[in-house]
Length: 252
Ligand code: XBP
Ligand code: MG
Image (cartoon, rainbow, N blue to C red; front, side, top):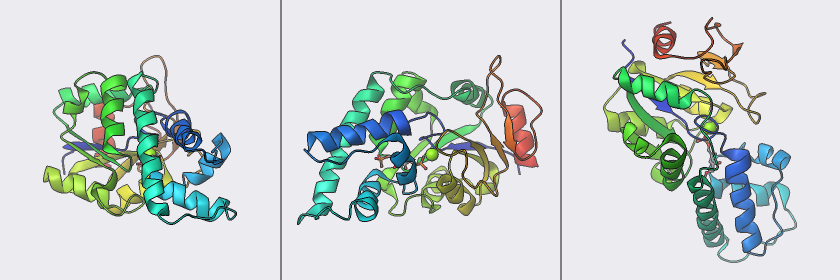
């Protein structure tokens, strides 16, 4: 089967959004609401076990704050906190404060030129994706992606495969024609569950995750002059990921 499309995760894959994007946005929302909740870098790493911001807040309370007495209307409170958090994240991203990871823009541009179809399959809120693309990838780059599948559009978030299945259904494409790009164990479970060959690029939060089943695990996509390195799987034997390599990986 020929490679026709690339499906990208966002958080941790296109950009390092978690530590210096989502985390401070959550903390700002908590402080603004007068809550004594605060997520430091280490705690946030543990909380990433649960995907989805609303789901993550509820998990924090259940797992780490047995002292906290949930008020009536706790779900609505979490939804309001999440709206405030999204506002803070969007402000940060709109200042261009969250750069793309190495090689991302180069590979996307090359893939487009090669006629590959592009889509996004992410757990995060849709506004977070569009603002990040517009301000960090470049004006108008949302249009590079045929489908932006995000957030609550499917009820079951990653590690469920649903968001990938949704994106492929919208595109009218089969898993065998696609490659997925992920950075985390939950993300990889989702892509593998959808039957997708998956290239993983790790980051500080996901270095020690279990990536069994990935086609290859790399440090990042690399760029001419800033080579990446191979962490697991067949060594690409080249300093950066390009479309020719993706075709080989997909065929292998
Ligand atoms: C991303 C997430 C998201 C973000 C926060 O996971 O887990 O929850 O941390 O986004 P993935 P929201 O990279 O696997 O898609 O607060 O908008 O939910
Ligand atoms: Mg991710």
